[in-house]
Length: 215
Ligand code: SF4
Ligand code: SF4
Image 1 (cartoon, rainbow, N blue to C red):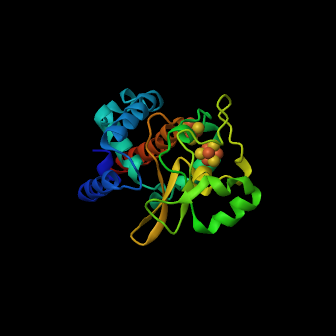
Image 2 (tube, rainbow, N blue to C red):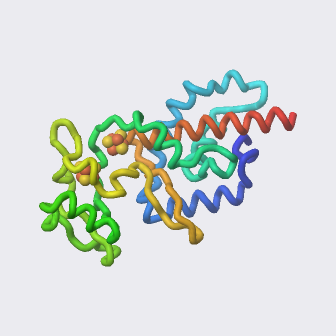
């Protein structure tokens, strides 16, 4: 019910399907559901359903709001973009190192190659053509990335690391001819979970505001 105050039901279904099918997001349905469960457990502590029971709000509403937060950029309702939220909350990264340990590919755009090699000349033998986009490149020794310190999880080339590492857990994709940042939905990444939680709280508050206005 709450979600319908924020987005048309059919449009939501279409966007969700598209997001789950997106190869670039690399989010399997199972992974997305795990993340949603992690967010739900945190959200119910932040936004008690009991408080809004009189308005007819249920736990199912919280779940639907989280599904919307997964796929909707808040800029469409006048809120912060995924990029702004991530930039303002770098403390949500626990430096657990999973992204550097488990990423299947560390993408290097052709335009950033020269700069990367200028700062790290030793890298020349550690870069190969990207398997999916051969005009671009990728790091050779990953899973784990050889630049990650095995104990501290710190990056040895932090100041000149590739753009994909700087942006994580956001992933830049092209949608309807426009570039946009989506969240890589990983339940094991605290940064991702917190980003979706923050968006869910903003969406929940906005939906409640609209509900009260309607009543
Ligand atoms: S971005 Fe996520 S997975 Fe990577 S170190 Fe931070 S919390 Fe861990
Ligand atoms: S280059 Fe640095 S930030 Fe990027 S995956 Fe390797 S260790 Fe992690």
